[in-house]
Length: 380
Image 1 (cartoon, one colour):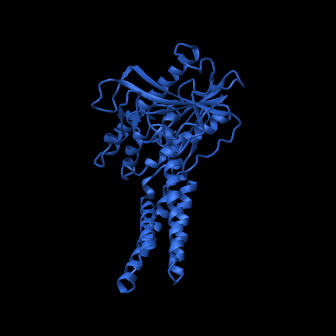
Image 2 (cartoon, one colour):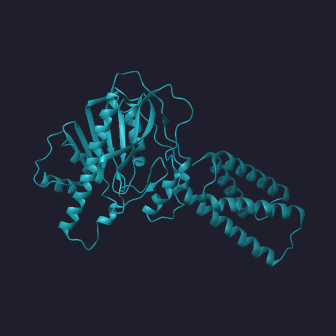
Image 3 (tube, helix red, strand yellow):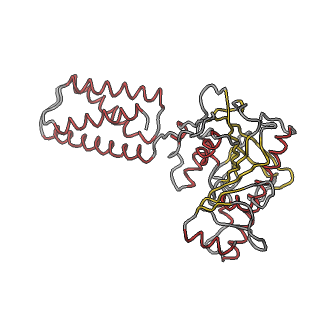
């Protein structure tokens, strides 16, 4: 929670408590002073921190109390039952509004990402990659080549300015909310959350090259979900690449402004039998694994200087790790059959494309429930 929004809530809570607990009406000057201070804090909050819809009831209470204070200061209220009834109604509205606001602030806080635990500062850049060898298949209406947005985090030095936002493009926040069955506006406040990464910062000269880690997000998720993991790894001296698997994200924004949303859920139906579901999962899985292969190929070209980048010669391609969550974990395991990958982790993910293949002989960690792990052992 941010400082001025918290102060605004506390001041309104104190005012309400005094108004309820003190039988005698507050002096006109005290009500006026309290409301002026509240309006001043509201103005600072809006100018410095920015508004968010979770606080709409708090804004209304602050403004209405201010209007009432002005009216009360210059006019003598008429005593009687009507005046008492209005006071009860007003207090009820204020208390309900503050309770709702406090609940929304708790459920949807403007949080701070965990501080990276390593010694390196963190730089980041975003790559737009087009695989000319593959036609898009996850969206049946798409006719072009497979396109990916990939974010890279790396150890940096000489950082300046402010870190980039946690969500650089707020257009994805509407589809993100809808993906969880929530109103499209509910996550707009995330635009105020900052990362610990600096755009296009110089890569650190402390080492000649840094080992590579590839991250794969879960079903219908996004690379942004793994920001804190990527930042922490980069702070310890890794180059970290997170892939937005197009059409398996809640939203992906391309440099020309196009936005794609999740289409992989269209491959599944509650009426499908097991074999159909498994076949469709394998089809999606092959695309995701091919994404990883393509990205590694592009990183080789970047490292050799065939694609222009400040990362030229700085990626240790002899040491590549991979991990992912959910279907991203399955992608990590399936990708581990590539000879370039050294080790991997599957975070609470299943597996796909197992028919006719022996288990991977790479060091690989599965983090799952006990029941899920028993299932994994049966098929490996």
